[in-house]
Amino acid sequence: MEYFTAMVIAYTLRDVPFETVVYYENERQCSDAMMAGADFFKTIYKVERDSHISCIPTEIASSSPRPKLRKIKQ
Image (tube, rainbow, N blue to C red; front, side):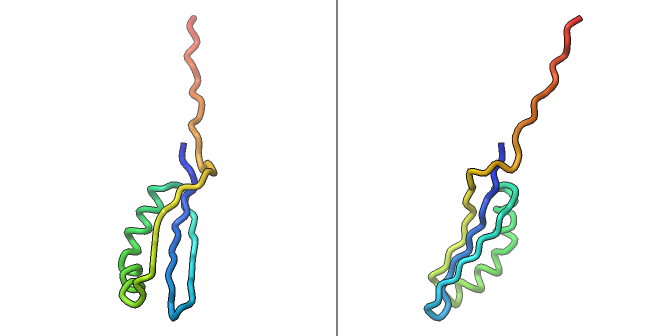
């Protein structure tokens, strides 16, 4: 079963805290997006060391296993 996953980006700029949350279908998509945005995060980190980015799975299912039909014996 897969769960929606939140990418949380938090940083402070000139003593003002900012936080953004973006949701993905699963943890893999979130991780891929986070790695693709690594240069963006490095830009923030250069200016403000008080920054954080992570993927946090929720408890809300985004997909679930489907039952499979059994073969009927004849």
